[in-house]
Image (cartoon, rainbow, N blue to C red; front, top):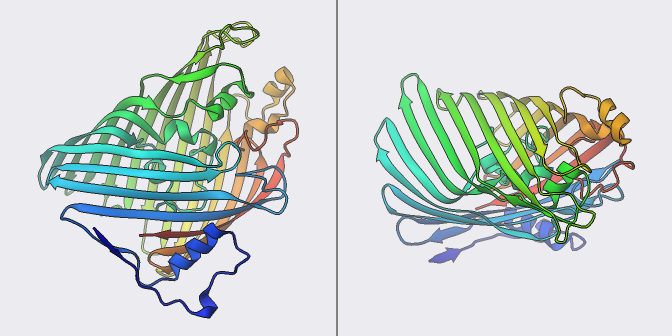
Length: 412
């Protein structure tokens, strides 16, 4: 395999030396002409992306210590390769480095690694299976959420795509079957998979217990599926997707002052609708999240509740280079306790930790087809989706806060 890179790099285009090296690297790559070009044997391709973000908040922290002077602790770097040795057989793998605040300072993971075999492939039908680590097909963006060029904003709607639970839902190890039908009345795609999710970590524990306990969570067999309908080449899109996440808790041994062995069941349903016009686009998604915890003992009684989320988003494409969007995003941890007052009365924890209402406005500019810069502003009422590791003291969070984000991203 041979790689080549050609750049014209004038003095005026150099990145300021005061910039940390990741933003400078992304800026330097974005100003190169042309993009990285790879020559390899037939059927083999290599692609990748680099994104660096800057987050500034008026109160609270998001992806690092963003409240004072802002945070550069938001980096995404991915390299993927695919090989098609046979017309119906594909091997694909991607490594991902992601830095996103406290607890995620240097996460390096196998993002996905799979074999995709199409049993049936005609002009109208396709039926196949993916084996290995696959991206979970949830909503409109989950399976491509880490690539800045494929999402509409720097931060996806947190009410649906919670960064605090990203690890639990981004991918799984197992098998996924899919079937696609293309016809005059539209395209229909069905995906269903089962496997072990990746998210038995501290983020999951904090979302359930609201604190770090001595024991650990273990992944159990879980399920995911999505049915997507498209018309007119994707101009109109409808989808229904869902997942059942099963976790078990193993107490510390010996279990002194610890919870008992228990189980956590998390069920997710997402309804999605999207219109993509030449200049205007509209997207909305609605989600229900049902949680059941059982068997943890008298210190953590059994409970069940259902959360609710939705957002409305409008996008305007002024030109192939410029896009702008406006979004209203709502998150309720418990649809029967929307302001968190009941939970506050029971635990003493401020109720604003269990809901969030977010107005967002943003824009992006494509300097080249491979280099993009973006900015957005959030005004948020509530802290329901704040990363808990960045904000360990729930009594110290502020109900009303603002977030400003910048991002530079390069792909090849």
